[in-house]
View 1: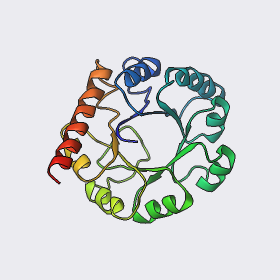
View 2 (view 1 turned 90 degrees about the vertical axis):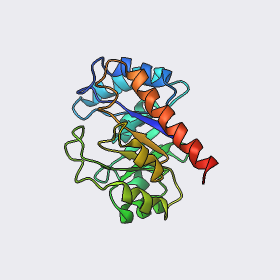
View 3 (view 1 turned 135 degrees about the vertical axis):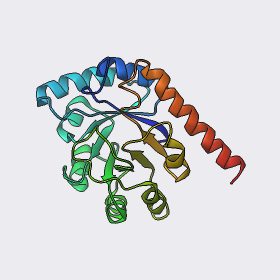
View 4 (view 1 turned 180 degrees about the vertical axis):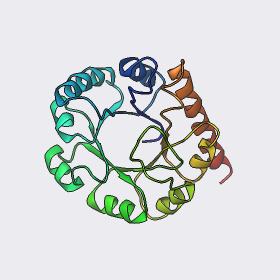
Length: 210
């Protein structure tokens, strides 16, 4: 799990979730997370089912809703700290599914790994307008601190742009998400690819000059 991690946001999107996911898949992302806070369970299942069919070669995760993930046979879920406890979600989904968990500090990160999370979403790195309850920015230092004590992938999210992404990557993030910097633009695929190229370039440089 590395590079650009795509999360849908219909409120910010210019073209809609269907087009955005098509573009994300075409840009070569490894993960698509379907996030929708306002729709009914019926509408969530219907849209998730459509989007999943676009992700034949891409991991398709559902935000928060274990029931929707089960209904559409998604590859897994991403859970927040106030969502279903990870252990209960694991019992429902089984060992073959991916479960990511949001972490805001070292304690949550350690507990998530101990409980069996497959990856962490560290959030919010910077101030963000895409999630009303995101909380205060944690900064890139927390990425470094968590990276030093856990062994699962770390995805950074919250207020990330092309300008500050290099700092996020160099801090140790295995992947990153920048919602407003992609879905609110005309060329979603092109904007995602800019992050992909940036990520690949910095990681390559780190290997050549450790």
